[in-house]
Length: 510
Ligand code: MSP
Image (cartoon, rainbow, N blue to C red; front, top):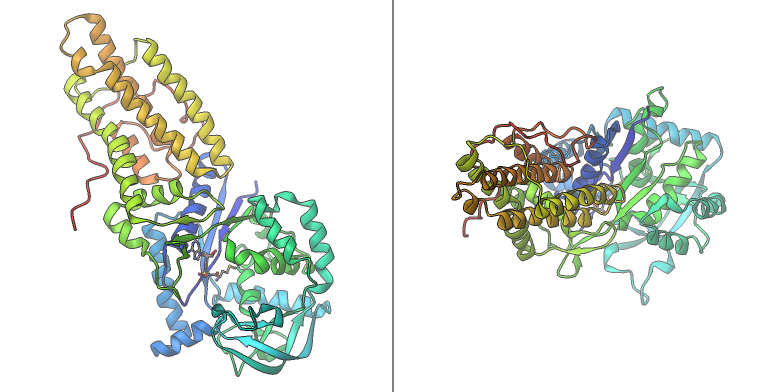
């Protein structure tokens, strides 16, 4: 069976990992974990984009070779992945021989086919963006800030004939409505394609840039960093070998909205089509984390270091916040106050409190053994009805990438279990000597435990560690599959509850 193949963008090696990078990895990880829980074999790729002028400059500034510089950066980025509990199967670095080889093969293929030609280029160049500019890029006659210093240059370069594929691409996008998710993002691509495309300059002379992949047909040049970087999606999964079809075509390339047009929606489909390779099935385009209305980025100096939050509140709380607050595809403003509110109310007061009440009452009234649920009154019927509705809805919402709503529904259910405990009030039932009150008390404990078990299964893609911990404290197995686990059941009867545990401690005052 072909794997469900999902990728993130590969991060630029010249920056430090920030909330935007962390979000993309967590989002992709949640999808990967969700698919695995649905029983699908998954291949999850992430990595590092190492070549280009900015990396060359940063290495020079740091007084080390670009390759040493990238090794250090790779360590930082992979450390972030492991601290965020990212379950990637592979980590590609564009300086690796497996990648360099495939980039050269694709370049040679397109060159032999006559899709790459050499020409004199005269015009403006932005070193910061590593791209050639056109008059239409000016705003009010000036080059926008994002281009940094712009210089006029004249040099010979190699060009990829993308113009000749424009009509094909427009037609492809018209016929494949689901290529870009969410669909409203396709509008921007279609707008861009209304203007005739310029052929893409895919070379940089070595005098200007050495840290790159040499053109196989002209050793005086290296290739343009985007031509290099995009190829990671196929070089990592063995393009050119029998292994390739195990993963390719990718099911999702997860990317931020800033790199949809033109790299992922124009260059990449055309590169693949020209090289005779199947296109990925879909681009999943997420929005930006903002800080007081501005994009969070290194150059603006307004970045939130994800590892600070993880260190203080735990990785699952951090993942919960990102998934609960961001509606996939939209932007979201990061606020520490909101983070604290979610942490104390949803996680501490609702989920954490439910667990701790259950462990407490289970010990006090049932000797830490989960009783069988024998009594079924209105309260129980309501709770089970909500459980069935919630599990069905939540799985559907996950499938549709509506993670924020999936979590909202799950936490509504968690609050309903807490309400149920108040309604049944085991502490009052325990004072009674009647058999029926005792049976109701036992059933209350059993139903609280079962509701919590179901909730722990449903949050597993987002909060894998907390899910596993809760299940273990309930005497249940870790959720490997939704199938058979994401339904109300009586599996906990007779299981032993663990010792009291505080999952989300109040943060110490600064
Ligand atoms: N190296 C390129 C991608 C090449 S993919 C073949 C690149 N790197 S990046 O480090 O600048 O960005 C990596 C990913 O993080 C991109 O998908 C980008 O959209 C995302 N984010 C960077 N800042 C972001 C936010 N503030 N918010 C959310 N994601 C953003 O682009």
